[in-house]
Length: 260
Image 1 (cartoon, rainbow, N blue to C red):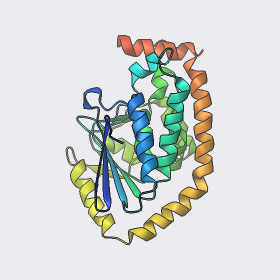
Image 2: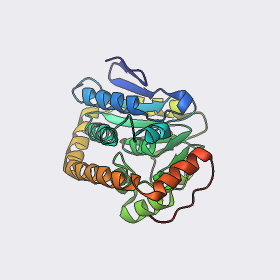
Image 3: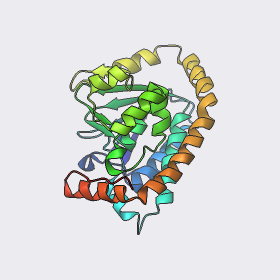
Image 4: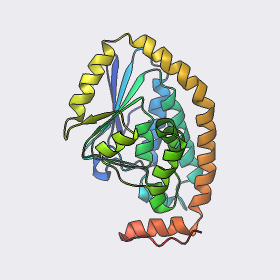
């Protein structure tokens, strides 16, 4: 399958997937969601690749779900289809038989941040803008955001971060445990390259067995979380607060929420 919104390069035991909508800050539209689902599902059968790097083209990792797509779901695009693709992406990515690395520069927000922290190793530059900011438009995290946030920081801290929706830089995210490696400005590719070389020079087969054992114990929990996120997200999309959040975003003003 030829991709339009992502690029996949494979060389020996290393694969690099680039989110490739730079003019939209790699926001995930329906086409990108379809392509990511297909790509990750196809990689599950690849026994040669042992490390996968996920990064963004241009100035950002990913700004999250495409707001224009959200505005279109009342008509041309089915919300259920969108959530189905998001579920497929998260489940396939979590089960990949390779070590996954997020290489973050610029923004990684919303669904983009859910994908980033789903990786085995998260590398972010100091000036990165990281946010689980669904709350800003009256929604909840999806893409397994609840699960991956809880896995990294625990339930109490996960709730605080999700509810606040605060934009964090790399240092702040490292301090709370949301990322694993901090890279100086403009050096994320160099840091990830060094990390990849180290991994590929290690007994990586044993590392992948450990990943398989640990993830297999959590897979059912992730599936339940994704099911609950899909149901709850539909509920939130029908609230006044979500409509106000979207309208305020489009109009570039502060939203006025009423709790309904």
